[in-house]
Amino acid sequence: MIIKFLKKLVFAIVLLYSYNLIAVHFGLIIPINYITIAIVTLLDIPAMVLLVFSLILIF
Image (tube, rainbow, N blue to C red):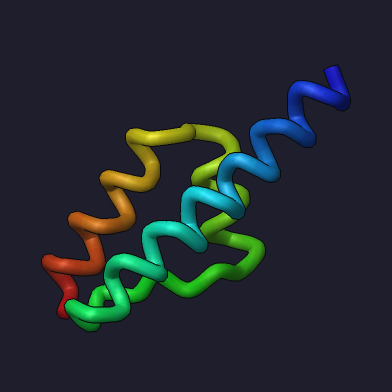
């Protein structure tokens, strides 16, 4: 159980970091902090899509 959670946590951090590497050219950076990591850890890819769309709609 703990191993599965740690895998999801590492996946969330890598996903956010890799997205930011690509999105820095477009100015659509999602900050890597406790809240965004928790959201992506709990909801996986749909949370990442939600964060990107909310970033586009707000800015």
